[in-house]
Image 1: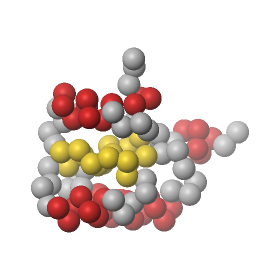
Image 2 (image 1 turned 90 degrees about the horizontal axis):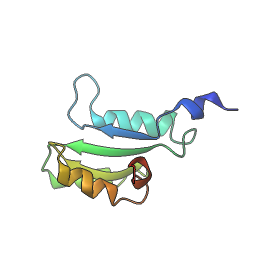
Image 3 (image 1 turned 180 degrees about the vertical axis):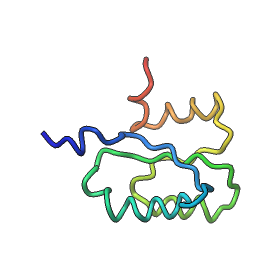
Amino acid sequence: ADNFSEEAPQLILLDINMPVLNGWEFLDAYMELYADKLPDTKVVILSSTIDPEDFSRAKKYPVVTQFLSKPLSTENLTELKENDWVASFFAA
């Protein structure tokens, strides 16, 4: 068995504005180093940004399955549960 892919996260909640390595830098590195090796891992961006350019930029990354606004709320989680890929993470 491939322990690397078995131990990898299936879902990453990612903020854009992080110290040292921001979300875009993380996504660029992730796409280069891991996207092909971990085809089942998806990213949900969770950010306080209101910049339309950030929403457009996120769509350019095939691993990004959703973009949610911070703070995380019941409404965000309900929206996330409606995402076909992410719904399996929520108990019925």
